[in-house]
Each structure stands twice: as C-alpha cells, then as structure tokens.
Amino acid sequence: MTAFPVRLYGDPVLKVATQEVTEIDGKIASLVDSMIDTMYEAHGVGLAANQIGVSKAVFVYDIGDGPITIVNPKIIESDGEWMFEEGCLSVPGLSWEITRPNAIHLVGLDLDGNEVSIETDEYEGRVFQHEMDHLNGVVLLERLNDDQRREAKKILRKRSELLAERDPDGLRGLFS
Image 1 (tube, rainbow, N blue to C red):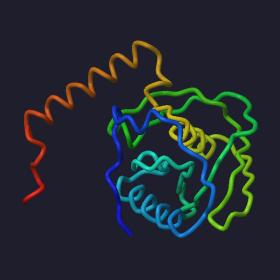
Image 2: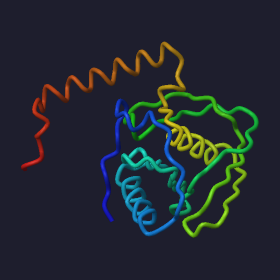
Image 3: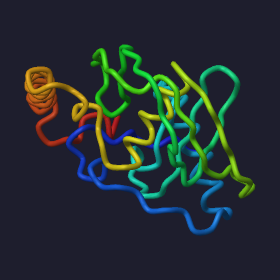
Image 4: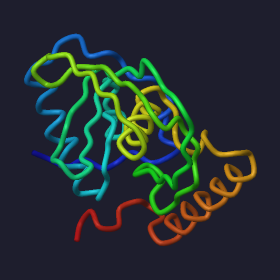
C-alpha cells in the first residue's frame, strides 16, 4: 500500500467531523492499509482517516500488539481522570500534559463488520480518545489552555515562516 502525508494543524479537513462508514468494502480495506502504512512511516501509535484527508469515521492504532482498526467508533462511557503527556502526528514535535478520562468503554466495528466493545484505561484509552477527537474535528491544540494554545500557535507560525524561507515556491524536493 501507499503511505500518505499526514495533514498538519491548520488543514481545514482536521476541523470537520468525519462521516459514518455505511459499507465496509474494498475501498475501506484499502484506506485502512494506507492508514496503517502512514501511521508506521510517521512513527505514530494511532491515526484517524481525516489525518490523511479522508472524512470517514475510521481509526487505526498499534500500541504494541499489531495494527487494529475501529470503524464508526463511539465512546459510550468514561470514568476517572488521568493526566499524561500527549503529542499528535498533525502537530509534530510538540506535546503537552493533557487530562482526559482514565477509563473508557468504546464500541464500533472491525473490518469484517463485527461489533467491537472495548473497556480500557490509561494509555490505550488515551489513544482511543485522541483518535476520537480527530474523527470529531477536534485537534489536540483545542485541549490546551489559552496560554498553551497561544504559545503552540506561535511555535507553529515560526516553523511555517522558516519553511517558507527555505522553500518559497513549495517545490523543494519534488524534482531531486
């Protein structure tokens, strides 16, 4: 399969809630294969479809047991509170202490259309919640307080300016 570029903060596709998958078919299976390749190439542990520009309610993850796909996920219960340093492939190189529920109950479908029901906590639960945020059009910066968000945006603007200085026409690397 093919790895795709991960959409970065500021890309409008990341701000829009994804659409439910109505049929799990070869197109969805192919999308998932590309998502897994992209996640591994980017050294991530999870990836939502809209992070590669596809507005479908699908995410993949691998926390060490091999890649798993969840289609049309929903968190139906959550409990507790857990703070953990969290980063995002769409905001590379930055991370923050984020407080989220500790335990969650997630339901959805696997690639065969079978119902999935997972009760989990801590790290796996955090990955699910992070990817669910993406599917709902929420980027990690929206989980920050006002001061943190301003600082993050300042860093991202500076990075963008530096990139524009190095590659003003956006063609660097396309022909080499």
